[in-house]
Length: 125
Image (tube, rainbow, N blue to C red; front, side, top):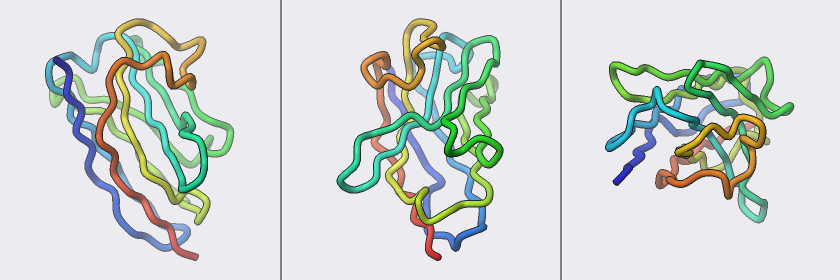
């Protein structure tokens, strides 16, 4: 059984930075595909970033150049470094794990098999 545990959320002013972590239990971060999603109140959950087993990364246009996804295979942890945060980045952030290579459709929620419980990010103007 795979368990994903996010941490690192919080409140920050616009222009600030946060780093989210997702500890993975029961599977290796080096296998297949992992992603970060977010969901703001009243909105659909959307893909933010993804990373394949070979390190290829994917980003939503809205976060390109500001966010960076990475993984540490020794700590079995996924990260999302978020810089130059904007109020519109406010959302609950979730990490997700896919048991196959989904890079061609990484932002589709239904392609992921396991999800974390989420961590809240609030950006004030």
